[in-house]
Length: 143
Image 1 (spheres, rainbow, N blue to C red):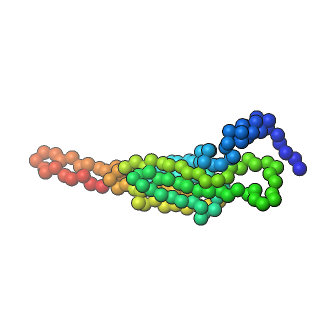
Image 2 (cartoon, rainbow, N blue to C red):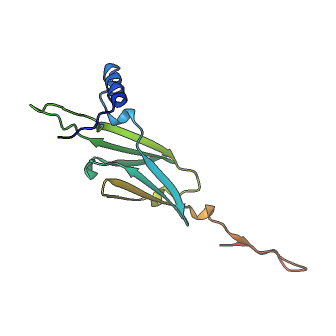
Image 3 (tube, rainbow, N blue to C red):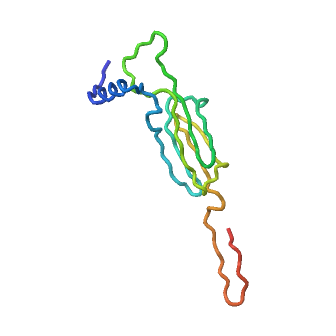
């Protein structure tokens, strides 16, 4: 068996254990990418090894909370040789602006990546405004 050794990583891991952090994901950020694609915001969360049943999404007052859990593999008589993959429960919160439609969120989970699609609210989409000229009556805003 070939193993690559990084003495600084080992030192960091030992320091975390001495300080009480046993490698739980709650101490680490949940990696995320976010971008706008037309009238939709797309967010990807990396959640490798997480069961879809353990993922919980909740929106309250424009705050989106993502919770997930990856169980520990060391149970019973198993003895750890290397433990670099974090386990446990963790969460991340995102503040959704008033311009997003929190009721229209679509979520999917494929290959360890949770993808959220959040549509832009209708009232936040760009609109054209007509300009009246001469003696014409002012026109209303059109979508």
